[in-house]
Amino acid sequence: MVLIFPIILALCLGLVLSFLLVNFFRKQDAPNLPPGHMGWPLLGETIGFLKPHKSNSIGNFLQQRCSRYGRIFKSHLFGSPTIVSCDHEFNLFILQNEEKLFQVSYPKSMQGILGKYSLIIATGEIHKKLRSFAVSFIGTSKSTPEFFHLAENMSISMMDSWKSCKPVSFYKEAKEARARLSSTVKQMIKEREQRNIVGLIERGDFLDVVLSKKSLTNDEIVSIVLDILLGGYETTATLMSLIVYFLGQAPNALENLKEEHQGIRKRKKDGEPLNWEDYKKMKFTRNVICEAMRCGNVVKFLHRKALQDVKYKDILIPSGWKVFPIFTAVNFDSALHKNPLEFNPWRWFDEETSKKVSPFGGGPRLCPGAELAKVEIACFLHHLVLNYRWKTKADDYPLAHPYVEFRRGLLLEIEPIGKIFGRES
Image (cartoon, rainbow, N blue to C red):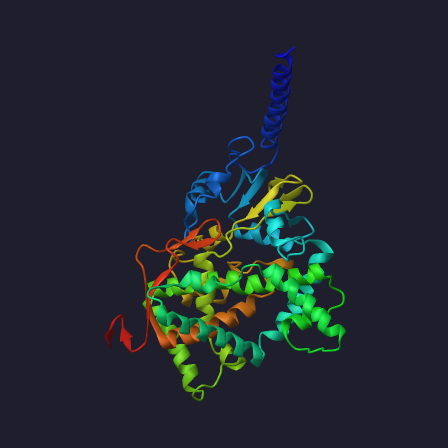
């Protein structure tokens, strides 16, 4: 009798494994699927897909499979059969058919971190409601004197903190002080609600505007605040770091950027703050921001799922399959971009360039804070290039891990203009 249970358990496990294997191999034999390899059962090719590589490259995994199978191929990633797209036209098709043919489908681990009301995770009517508020708030905030004043003060404050730091760990500095944001925001909401109950209502700051929207629940308010804070600091800090890195490797671009900001400063009185009219003159600055997005790949890919069987040209995407539009591969496609690995902000003077990339996504999920981030970074660059010079470490570079990190934290040798790293100019 003692041996019966282990035998039964082994048989059951064998049957389950056989079912999974049969089901796994059936999935890759569906008609009209693109070529590809599903890797190991259950695990698939996830480890190879996530292997760190320089973020200003597509990495070996995509390079090998695009060479072998073409720019659209099948795989098995994050536990699901997946169509991987390195094709710009197909990526646009996916983004433009959000909630019609495809839907956001991130792993449960991300849902636990970001919360079900995050703009990244939310779908359907909840997403529409939250995004509508974010777009409205950001649209009215980006050009106000108050926002420019805040962005400049933050930039100057961060630069002042560098005086006692040699070298500066720029990536860490740009991303500091966001611990326990959720609990902090909840506590602030509670205090504001109590203040309003006793009649001490003060309208005007960001949280007061959000709280005035009676259609939002407290959980939705917390999520909106976190999305804007994390979008404004997390991804913007990463992009700022990439810009500093690429400018350190491109002296011609840095000099052109400096000349643009010197021209803006000459037209202003001493100490006069930047404004929306100044920002509109920063054409090359915006080119630098977009080129850093293209070369650095803050967002490598998106998670989507087919809501039904989808036919695209001669390819069939079965219902329930994951679909990954890969922005990195499009950004470095030599058929779309001349010398794609080169950091070249001048390419953005050609309006066609903006049609060949999706640095801020697209369709109904186009990043609502894209312009706000550009304004914030432009203010930062204005003070950086006019007041500092810097050098990057030769062995430091951005890594896709899968999100961008720097190998050494982007350590900079940085000093105010007037000195050249330890001696008077």
